Length: 91
Ligand code: SF4
Image (cartoon, rainbow, N blue to C red):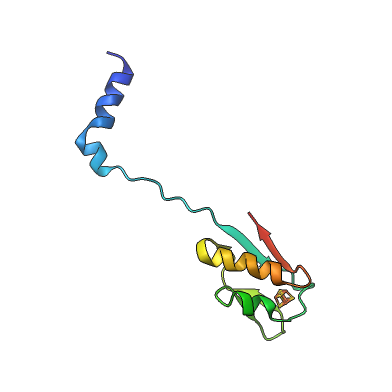
């Protein structure tokens, strides 16, 4: 018999279907702040408090450098709100 025949048997078996899972891959976006450009205006924090805060040096810092889902959406909005383009997004 051909190998495809055996593959079909395995793939259609109850045991294989029961144990197999589907990949729930999430592609994350990387985010960082250019501290040289940041003027500490706080627009990013106001737009996305879930992922930005102002540090002791009055510069924005990200809480999570790798984001997805709702945090990714507000991180993008924060990047658009930045008046000096200090927020760097990497897909
Ligand atoms: S919006 Fe831009 S300039 Fe303002 S605090 Fe955030 S990163 Fe800094």
